[in-house]
Image 1: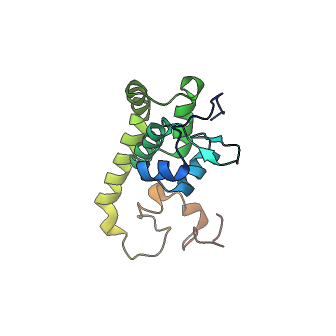
Image 2 (image 1 turned 90 degrees about the horizontal axis):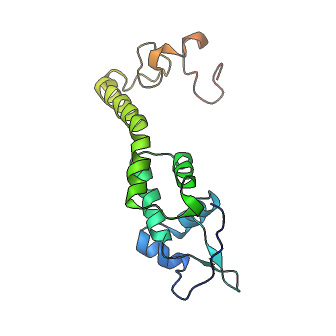
Image 3 (image 1 turned 60 degrees about the vertical axis):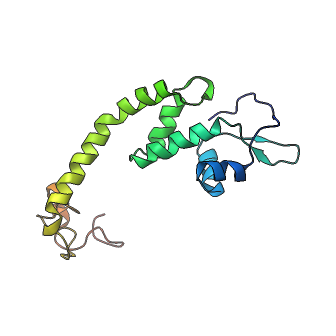
Length: 156
């Protein structure tokens, strides 16, 4: 997120205040900032301050992550907002619609996994042809039998 021309205001929030109000650790706020998802301004003493609208932005990030949206997709969605503005209800509706297909696909994959999980528990093979968990569609067949996905494994 590019830094917008914002000046320090008396009601801006410290990282601790944002963390307390949003339920997100200060380290997560710093991470979100490094990832370009939120922005802070600095005091004369180089301390971070956040405008109050960052609370809605953090809520947007957390809810999006909670439904399985990647940070890369969240960043891309936030980048579509004019001048780094905080998402509105209408923005959420539009952006969440764009994620619906990927979420439906993930749900279907998880349901298939749930329905076949009892076939996999304890096998330890990780490349068994019938393993829908670690080798869907037998994509590892070309590497032969055994645990090819383990560190130092063949072919991967």
